[in-house]
Image (cartoon, rainbow, N blue to C red; front, side, top):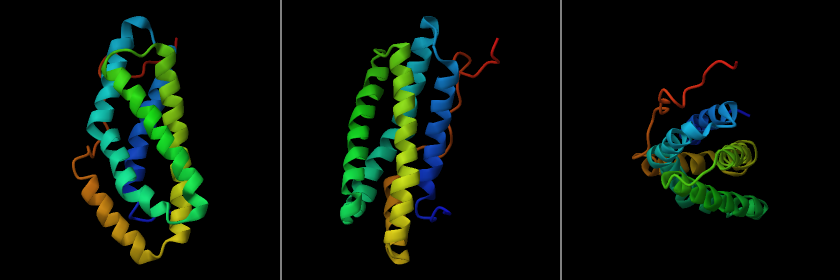
Amino acid sequence: MLRDKSLIPLSRQHQHALALCVRIDRASPIREDDLAAWQKEVAEHFRAEIGIHFTAEEQVLFPLALRFQELVPLVEELQADHIWLRDRFAEAKRQKLSSHDLSALAQRLSAHIRKEERRLFERLQELMMPEELAAMGENLDTALKDGGQTCLLPDSTTRLRPRK
């Protein structure tokens, strides 16, 4: 199903986060010497975009989804993901993640995004009226206004290198 324009800003940010997940996955296992740079980048992604994105979902998207009984278990699962992911991002900021922890964060974030895109967004587009989706889009635009609109670029340590 084509993504409704009201959800496109969230989907665009999902693409940025998925790009980070793919890079972490391809770099894994991350060398001990590179761990600090990766954690710094992960924390910066959270500060610049992902944290704002989570808040927008929690304040705008999830309350609307909770109006539909069939979506309650999914929203509760997504909220639990946000809690777990926020904890990992906070650990990255404090430079407390291992290579395994970074890999687990990337896997969980990727799975979370796919649940939102494939299950929540698809179903909301089917359940909500066009005018409700448009109003939600306006509220999301307001909630996301402080978030980054570009994908953060990796530094020399965290950029992908050809496999040897």
